Image (cartoon, rainbow, N blue to C red):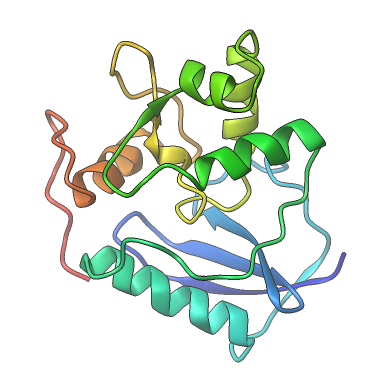
Length: 170
């Protein structure tokens, strides 16, 4: 798969937005683990319509004026991963779910660890809100963008997380 990309400065660091034609396939973190999301070669395309639209919607999200994304997405992964990622899209803005709740939602309550692994491989961070998945105890757990970014995203959505900084204006 040959992809196009742009970078976007954001309150949670530089994000790399990646498209395959007219569909968004990834939002990668500035310090993303190499190989976490498998993509083919990418080339810069600052005028790609889906990337321009994604950047605008992310700016609106960070400004607090967008609570739902309207983008054409293409998830690349296993059938199980795609079920988990589809479940992420159902978590409302400002709400959280536990890994076990996601496992139950996809009809596989014993797959809590597998849900966690799929959540960690989510290629379209923020839009497919893996940051809204927390531990059963209510604690923040692993996140590709880092726990500080996870806390900032949840705070932006109205959550209150001790020890987090205010989200800078954007």
